[in-house]
Length: 350
Image 1 (cartoon, helix red, strand yellow):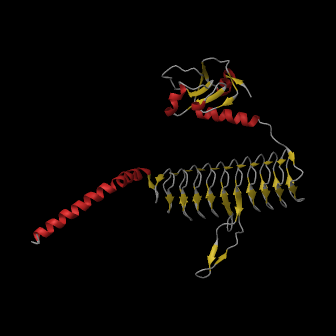
Image 2 (cartoon, rainbow, N blue to C red):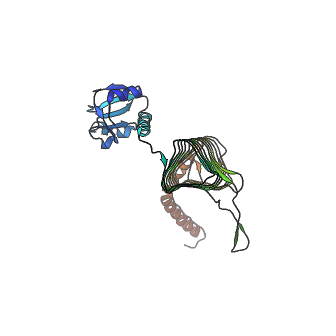
Image 3 (cartoon, one colour):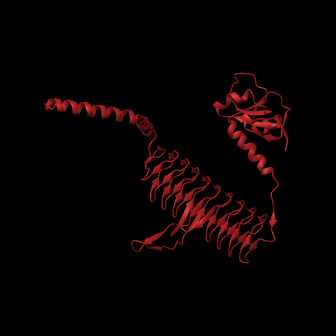
């Protein structure tokens, strides 16, 4: 697809600085810009690339004033990053979408599929399933019995959804993710044996949720594991049984949430965050990478770091002390020697 700068500026309601007739047909990072590419500048630390980039068009914030000569045509917008996202969404929506049911797909007679669906090769849809209009299931998707998938949802190759689960509308689930596998429930019977506790609940995923690749979301022991609307989960995340994740919460890769924890809305978890079980995490909580949370977070909009996770300002002060520990130990050892010497002198031993 090709667009000129004038058309792009019109779509974004932006201001052109440069040639409005230049043509772009691809996207590139500003440091990798090439002729015919559209790029963007949102982070000031990348500004120096603006003066050397070969990109034809660059999106910048309306408040930005170049400090030197710029060869590219600039389009000034309210927020360059948001504007780029809008363009990428437009291009993605323009792609040709597959439709139809492949001959190797198996759909049980009691299942129903909506209009304009795509069911790819070797996909299985179980008994009494309900598949909404416009859904796209890529090859090797498995849908267990009594499961429903809302309209316009996309399941990428190899997604497995166990029985009785509910997937909302406009959801995207990436390759290899498993939804509705058994929660980790075992009752100790002796010092060396455990009895499996049947997991008879399900998983409910509300509308507009996106789930990355190779995520595991366990079904509830009883009731439901619930992912509220607008949640975004990165790759390689574990969500335990009976967990509830509040609306518009985002989590980065390798985060783990233990069973029965309730996470509030609008939270942000960085990579490798670990949350213990049966906790409550307040709305708006932000947790830094590799932090561990062993107790409830009651204060809304908390910012936590470390293990055990503490307020980020306290963690920063503690980190400054950690770095000085070798020096402090040397000083303590010197003081011990001096005290020992003084004590011996007072006791007349030297």
